[in-house]
Structure formats: structure tokens, C-alpha cells
Length: 525
Ligand SMILES: Nc1nc2c(ncn2[C@@H]2O[C@H](COP(=O)(O)OP(=O)(O)OP(=O)(O)O)[C@@H](O)[C@H]2O)c(=O)[nH]1
Ligand SMILES: [K+]
Ligand SMILES: [Mg+2]
Image 1 (cartoon, helix red, strand yellow):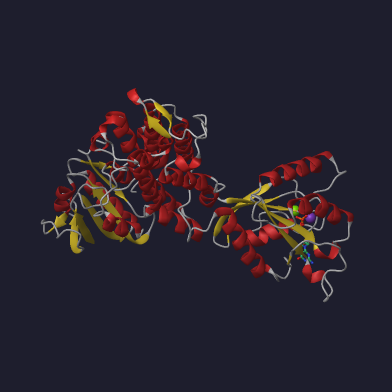
Image 2 (spheres, rainbow, N blue to C red):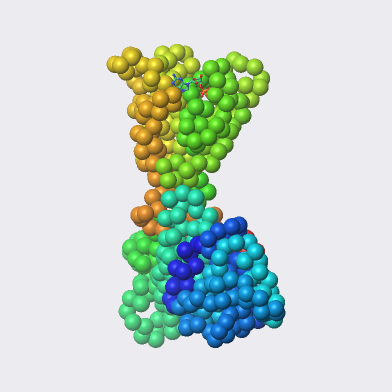
């Protein structure tokens, strides 16, 4: 059983934010007349399976299947005999829960049946529910869609829930849970609140003009239009005459501090270098090096399966081989690549071209050298052309990070690698004996935390392109606001900015976006 059912039911009492609440038109569009049912726990034989219903006939369905036929107290588990309402045949002895709306996950009347997880029990109970008038099987994501339509979850929380169900690594789980807890949505609400206040000030000015004794400084609170004074007819003229600045470049101190702070916050989030998206879909980690350095051996070691062929023959790997792995708790797409060398046949040359191409797309480069062969031309060439130009090791500013690994440490004499001038910072490893692997994983964890963001701390991450799109739209609108030539345009820019935030949390009203998001869910969720 997914623990999420319990937790989410408990969330039901929480009130939604006004920015994120979708009005009940959406709920009506869903045809809330129908009551849906589905198996909500995983498919297949298991100890306990959870079947649930949502909709107005939930209570009738529960009464039809149980004996005694009264409803249990709300949100309190009771043991009941379930039988088929058509034949009266007993189906199972089950725990049943009754969640009257609106205090339920979907906001509608809901029932949960915790039955024994055998396939015959589950199909018997599902068939029995299907025979109750007004009930039909749920479609994928339909429970969550109803919760969204009834304002129980905003769209970023829905996305967090989808991510939580699909989370495969610890870091993904932490991130998803934070988003499900509403941190990103709450941040949007706070930002939108700032814009609402700014808009109210600007609109007040439009409505009353300067002759109506508007409180001194009211426009400064509103936003950058604070650089203007209002002339008759709502036209703005620069307030600061001494510098006689052109309208397009207002002195920054005239912009309202809150709107400016909002711009800075949006910009910081956007410059987060897509860390949240990497955390959601996996960082690109590319293993590269000269032929025979042990790249494929390392990929197999990290992925704990024989992804790539390992052989003493240089030039074994030709194609780029990708495998998704959990690296020290972070999701990564690990690529094994051809050894970098020139002057070989056309097939290997194509492999080298692909390897170089993949290198450019890497978030994190794991550069592998044979520790016992550092003085060879291929090692020197690799150091000079790949490692050194990238600064030897990750620097804070660069978006692409690099980790240098000296493999085959088992072949080294006890005093370590021989004289090798200017070797950048590195880790020693032996894929053969496993020595140095713990240290490598520890360093990978630090590197990946830098690439993906640390989901345990800091502000909520932007995990989807959709989030970036709306924040960028909001930021663009704020720049129009700053450059606006009159109050009406300034107000409109604020409205556009605010709408982007509303769309981020509320989905922007287009059904296609909702379809894309809800498609991520399985039936029963
Ligand atoms: N002694 C020792 N040998 C290793 C180690 N790692 C890999 N090898 C050997 O080095 C040889 C090359 O290993 P691969 O993993 O195929 O190297 P590669 O870099 O993928 O080679 P190409 O794909 O041909 O570029 C194989 O014979 C491995 O068994 C190690 O840590 N110690
Ligand atoms: K090889
Ligand atoms: Mg290889």
C-alpha cells in the first residue's frame, strides 16, 4: 500500500490558497456526478490491496457491499465483511474507511477498502463495485484530477505527487515531498501577493489621480512607477527632474523595493542552472578518457551491472552507452563512451566523434586515466585537451563539472604514481579491487549535489520546463512594467506578471497542460 493515501487524506482539511484555487467550474466539467473506483495499490499478489471510490455514490457503494449496512464513523477504520451485492456471496473480510467530502483527498465522498491482496479478492471486489448503480472504473490520474478541480491540491503539488510516486532516488523523494508539501506553490502565492499589492496601488492612482489626496508615497509602495509623477489624464512624467533621466532608465532607487526584491528572487531561481530539472530527470554524467583507461569497468561498477563490454583491447567501446543509475542518492544518466584517440579506422573515429559530442552535453565529466600509464602520449594528450581546459576540477562558477579519476591504482608501486608534472586534483581508484570506490561515491555525492541542487536545503527547486517558462514570463512582464510609459501599461504588465504566477500554480486553464501532467499518473491515483 502506498503510505501516501493516509497522509494525503490527512491533508484534506487544509485550506487552499486563493491564487491556486481553481473554481468549481472545473469540478463540474469533470462530471462529478459519476462515482469512480479503482485499485489504488500496486498490481499483483500482495498482503493488502487498497481499493477506493470517489463521488456521490460512495456511501451507497459501501453500504451495498458491507454488513452491517451502516456507514462506519468518518475517517475511522472498521473491520467489515464484504459481499457481492448481487449474489450476497462473501468476498473478503476487510478494513473499510469512510471519508465524507469535502474532508477527503478528492474533496468528494470517498471510501477506502483495504482488502487481502489476492488477485481473485481484488477482481471480485472491483466487479462488485462495478455492479453498483452510478459507479464506473476510474481513468488514469482521475482521483488526483478531482482533488485538483476541488482545490485540494494546486498544480505544483499535483506535480510533486506525480514525482513522489515516480521517485527512484533519495534526493528525488526529498524534492518531490517538498513540492507536494506546497513549498513552490506557497512561494508563488507570496510573489503573487506582492504583485497584487503593487497592482492595487497603481490602479488606485489610475482611478484617483494626483489631485485626490492619495496618501504620500503610495506609488512608491506600488512599484517602479514610483519614478513617475502622475499628470492629468494618468500620464506619467519623471518625478526626479534633477538628473532628467530618459523614461526608459529610471534610477533604481525609485523602484519599489518589494517588486525589485521579487525580480531578484525570480532571477535567482531562473539562474539556478536547471538544477531542479536535473534532479527530476537525472544529471548527465559522462565517463571519458583515453582507450583502455577502464571507463567501461567504472561504468559497470557504478551501475552494478554489466552494461558495457570490458576487454584488454583498446577501442572496445564504440557507441555511447547510456544507463540510468542511482549515484550516491542522486539520479544520473551515466554514459560510457569510446576512448579518445586519433588516427584509427572510420568506425572507431565515429565513436570518438560521438564521445566528444556527448562530452559537451555533460553536467558532470568523470575523466578516467590509467594511473600506471600517465606518461603515455594518449594520457598526456587527454590531460592537455580535456582536463586542463576545464580547470582540472570543478570550479564553482562553471556549469560543467569535472572529476579526475586515476584508475588501476592496484598496478602502482606503493609510493603512488611516478613523477608526473602538474597533475590536477584527482582520486585514486581500482575498479579491479574496489579500493577507492567509497571515496569516489562520496565525491560524486558532493558533485551531484552541486549539479542537481540539494533537495534538503535552500529554496524550492524548479523541476519542470513549465516552471521556468512561467517565471521567465513573469520576469519579462516586470521588465515591461519598469519601462512602461504610462500607468495603464504599467498596470497591464503587473497583471501579466501575476497571471504567469497563477498559471504556474494553477495550470493556466489549458486542458492540454493538465492532460500532460495527469498522464504521469497511474489508474487509482
Ligand atoms: N589492473 C587493473 N585492470 C583494470 C582495472 N580496470 C580495468 N582494468 C582492465 O583494463 C582493461 C580495459 O578496461 P575497459 O574497462 O575495457 O577500458 P575502457 O576504457 O572502457 O576501454 P575502451 O572502451 O577500449 O576505450 C581491461 O582488461 C580491464 O580488465 C583496474 O582497476 N586494475
Ligand atoms: K578496452
Ligand atoms: Mg570501454
